Length: 367
Ligand SMILES: *Cc1c(COP(=O)(O)O)cnc(C)c1O
Image 1 (cartoon, rainbow, N blue to C red):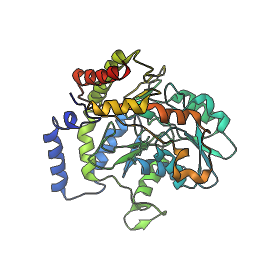
Image 2: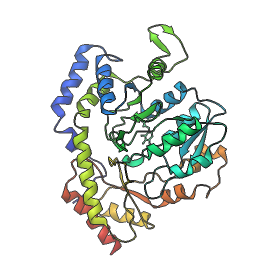
Image 3: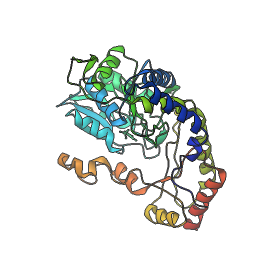
Image 4: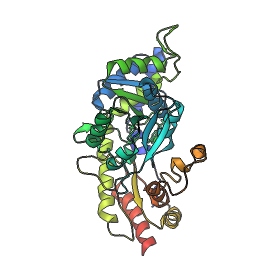
């Protein structure tokens, strides 16, 4: 049995009629940008994410960028960011002219280690950007406490963890302004690029609504130099349909993870994902670690099992950040994760048979 890394079919086929009807409504309404579907989806997503406001934008990177702009972060400022995130988190900081200051993750949870944050704070530090990586909520109680003590903003990168919780609070509801992504492969995915900012702060919500729409609240009157970063009606209508199914899809991801946990225990030198006490995991990805990562990946590929590496090169080692002059070895945990991590197939609708095929591929390699 072959197992693709990701298949949308079990999510999309059962709701085909409902999604097509939603697309048809947008087509017939003849209103395509910032209309009723965006407003309805924003209200529904606010409720889902335990935030008073949600502002639909063009993608997840813009959600993070506009959050930093709205908070007034700019040149000369430093922003604390995980050393092992997807590069988008760093790019948002670079866009406003601020400097990313990497902090290493806990190698067991893959999330920023709260115990290492304070050592990276300087008089220039303005914000912390925790990333709920792979679907697991960061230790937000500890992070918010540090931010409060040092008077720093918090901008959560919630692109991978819609619906995860930390000490009972939903990701995207802790920080001052938080970004999420509805890129198709995310846990809640549009049929193209889309994203949202969530916040509990009315003034920030207003600023972001203005920034995403040319710096304008009233058509043809521009208050600030804004951007064109709007959520399309088409995407909002689809997201509105899909959001209803997200809790069920999350339960299915968690079931797949339990099967993996059970059957991969003790194979070779495999290290399985660890969920920290108080946090929940919505398994955007199921990431294992092994020193034989590359050979294992090849073996699985030839057995018809799709895998990916998230991520092969940490941001500080990317050519794009060569100007920062960070030496190889400066962030050894991130570098080690990049060399040893492997993401196994993980999607709602995966069956026990799919999981068994992946497990068999792992067993035959390590035997
Ligand atoms: C996907 C992702 C983003 C960016 O989202 P886009 O919608 O692709 O712009 C940001 N941060 C993380 C951690 C992501 O996984």
